Image (tube, rainbow, N blue to C red; front, side):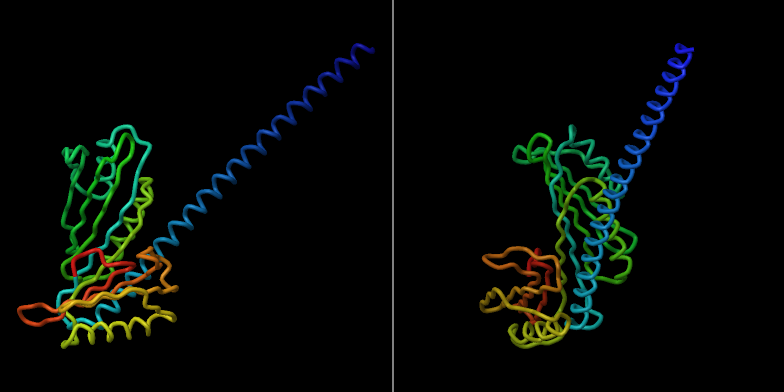
Length: 271
């Protein structure tokens, strides 16, 4: 009788232990699932924030450029992403993956000053050009530049959609890239470059609550200023200041036409 009771107790104890282990495993699985879901949500929010920030900046820049340049004249836009990638084994494999995702042909590698570099480019259906530059810095480390540009913006919705797509692809490729965008066109206002810049600056102040001038440059044919704009979340350090925008006006020697260039957060093309 005692033996039967002991055996029965052992069975119950074993059953309890198995039930406890099952509950513990289920709890751990749920915790891991919740943690993974939280990480995915955080990454999605981060990407959404960056994309929203880029979209807002693009729209503000295009709006400002449209108001300050000659109607119907070419409106050039150059959007660049620059960032590092590390932790890979074979750069050619990573280049091939990124090229395919971007819809570019896989480029061959070339030795330039002791660094393997890869270049590829293609014209997109919406009239823009997409290019990739990849430079290997050291074992398992490279620097990547992706450029989306158009000589004359015709379809801002398609351009914006392409920008969203590139941002997503770079993030999925584990490339934490920073973006900058420049717009260039023929200034509607003629006369001295200083007057053109002041007019553009006035429109900039109408778009944003706070615009503070930080740096300026001037010579015979060119004037440039940089600004701090808190409403524009993307900023970089220039000199001793954190700046979000730059405006430059250059007067052509031959015909006296003013070329207006606006950059967020800085101009990265010749002005």
